[in-house]
Length: 322
Image 1 (tube, rainbow, N blue to C red):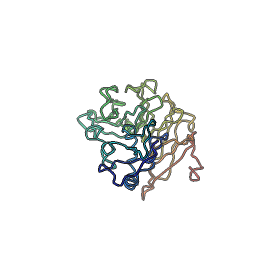
Image 2 (image 1 turned 90 degrees about the horizontal axis):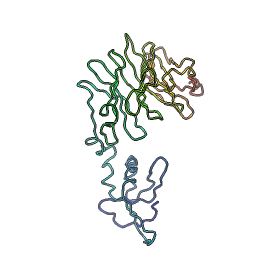
Image 3 (image 1 turned 30 degrees about the vertical axis):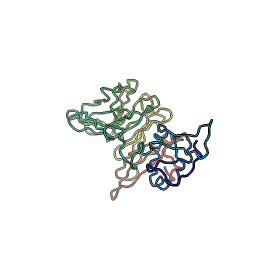
Image 4 (image 1 turned 90 degrees about the vertical axis):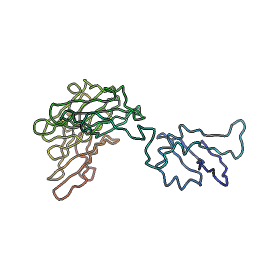
């Protein structure tokens, strides 16, 4: 830890930062205090703290020698201005080309809808592409520098046709504790959408231990998954809409509906006599399932939230009725 410094009458022209105290926390490096000369600037640009994690791990810090300590030695973080982004929110020029990456799957429309980062820092992006007039599941994995990870799929990309109809679309992606990639969305069969999921191994191949050949389709009326989460037992929880209501389903790790969840693996919740749609799901530290979305009773669209117990029942301790 750096503790001792001596204030100079005039800071260097480069505005090198003097660090008074730093501590290493489990969540990463956190800068506690700056030299007074820069304190106001740091408060104004507090988002720079994220960048400092990288700076502190790679920058050179001069420290007094234990063998020959010098009174008034000034610890100095070198090249701070060269390593920090010039302004909060600036593009990271170490990523892709000038901070930007584009990936072409097809000659028509390609849409990314969800993203996750795996334990190795690789970026998994999921969505759908127009593949000859029909939408298909599409994934890409990138290295931390934005280049396609060629160890994934074909040159970093994966395309999956779930059905031969017009619309197979991924809306959400999650990565389980084994590094397997779970995607969820919908497919259009006949006259309406159905829940659709797929699981891929870390190298981008369909995981044949999941569902039928790596795919699961759960048919009902007007179904669409908008969000997916994985609980502490490896079970897959999805949320979306079914016939205009909030809809949830939970699947076991092998892709079958979990009958310990509401008896058949399904839950629907009607907020009003109108259109309700769950758009996001998370699982809290107690295993309760929190779902957010929208409800429209006709005159306006409002926020809608619900919390469910692990067995799929509404948690009546949440707002009185769940």
